[in-house]
Length: 94
Image (cartoon, rainbow, N blue to C red; front, side, top):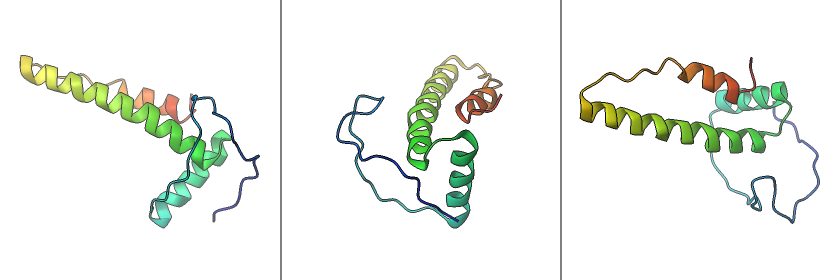
């Protein structure tokens, strides 16, 4: 179940130096419930959790993709053993 999170309206840039804008996207009910549970668990809004996921996970994913491409060019195997630890940090888990 989704519930409203009270917050002041923002008319100035946030901690990322930008003013947030409203976007619409669709999620399955399961994904929406997981997003809600995760945001409550770490104490941030759904919007902030999505912001973090996009900024950190995609940056990490693109970095890993570049490493894969470089490894493929060299013909070597890429070590992804630290990926799970980094995702746990992103989610705020020890």
